[in-house]
Image (cartoon, rainbow, N blue to C red):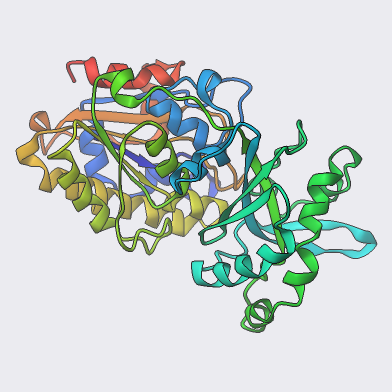
Length: 396
């Protein structure tokens, strides 16, 4: 099993006495795993954007420099959307912008203040008649995450992840004369969203309005070798987010849907752990992904991040250790990338991993699973896509 706590890794923080959230969180089960093997791995190759698309492809053993074409095509695969040779897929976020004096614009939230899926559906359904035209189609996703497919989209449009610019001025991007065809499409959503009754209600109750779309993460359909051909194993993927499910579908892995899996702190963690145990009875490898720590990091919420890490440890890692003893799996825990609270976005820093064979775990033997211990181990894998080979082939 590979258990991913998205964005768990972080930097030492003054408010934690120079420790990281992983260091102060109570994580007895990950500490148990780290007692056998712990190290650092570079999941973001030099020169590539530190996204979960790149990192999770890398963890599954695919060199992003060779196989990665963009985030949105992977999310499209999750929805069974077939991209033609002329199609470019874009992630379409519902975001909250602040319109300032002198025409300046600031990014308040990449997620419209964590808008719900039901609210998002009402807005996206209303936007479709306005934005869809020859060659442009919109597809509803989950919460703030949606898709736009653009046939014959202009090449070399900018890719600006909105979570990279939280609280920052984004006017220069929107006014860039070289990419006005993209921003004209974004601007065409403003009038409708500004006056939508749902946003008026959100503002009345103190929530951020979803007052703009934001297009990014674009790319063409990738050509990925099936996982069983690459590694000789059958596998399954469990995740709340379309990106990871889309990677699974592209690789020919079984995608296990878990009711109540939201990608936030209220997710059905117990259900995901139980589904992973059941899946391992039928396949060789289970890849389980939890989004909650990353969302807390983007929100700049330290307490929520520590809570998400501890829930991941108890409700996912712990339940699997307790419930899969008869299967005696080898278990890896990993933060796919760092999402430091101070930055509120992803970074390319090496990230901690650990693994253990369940049958060899010793209750009294523990090693703190954290960035500092991973660095002190002396184990560093600079080509992250080779990590899975070591995991599958090593004695521990």
